[in-house]
Image (tube, rainbow, N blue to C red; front, side, top):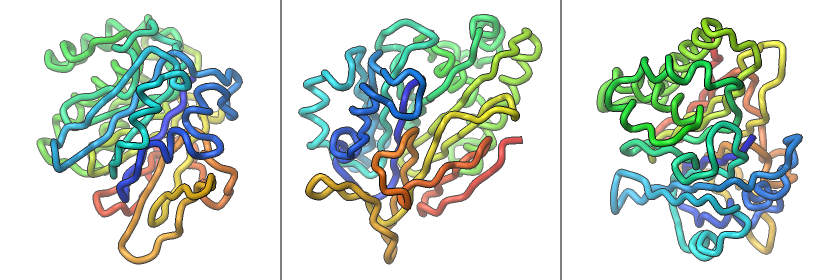
Length: 284
């Protein structure tokens, strides 16, 4: 089912999320604690922003397990960013290939997904027929995740060149509406789980959703404060003081510090604005 993490805030070295916490992303790739299947070894991906160099993110993906990638271990302590996203994959829809690794990148935007649409093959062709030529040609892989992101991106284009976190949430809602209609039309009765995160270097939106209101969606938490620190093997979110702010969205808690992690409500979106204030919106 995959695991993901997204962060926006004070610049921080990537290994503070990937390696140092007691339940780091690397440890989740071997032994995820909040999934029935704990192994997420079908590749990984990280994306990060360096605005002094480019508005577009850097992206590094690999089909090798995250726990056994020498390049990632070497780079992580040396990459410092105020906006990043990480994902470890357990393949469900699509082969184990770089084109199917998250995060998916379009212009200055990144998206990662934890979950899946059962029997996606039933709606893949009609979904693709809904896409603009640009997004149809942009899709390179086989995953339900990338196709849904393409659907989302077409909705976002309607907002124009500048948009807000609220606009992003609108487009997630439109994507969900299209998915629910397709599932009903083509007779997919199994539940679809959509835990998604969107970042563009300035704002961040997370989605925790399942199509069946009677069941619980996959776990998704957020943490906010002034900054996230790891010292002497202990990692924690420092409470907000002054103007410094940082927000993180994770599939699993990185530590056992209960006050650092709050669950995103069922079938809600978390909206992180440019000023790093946080809001929520229910999925209708």
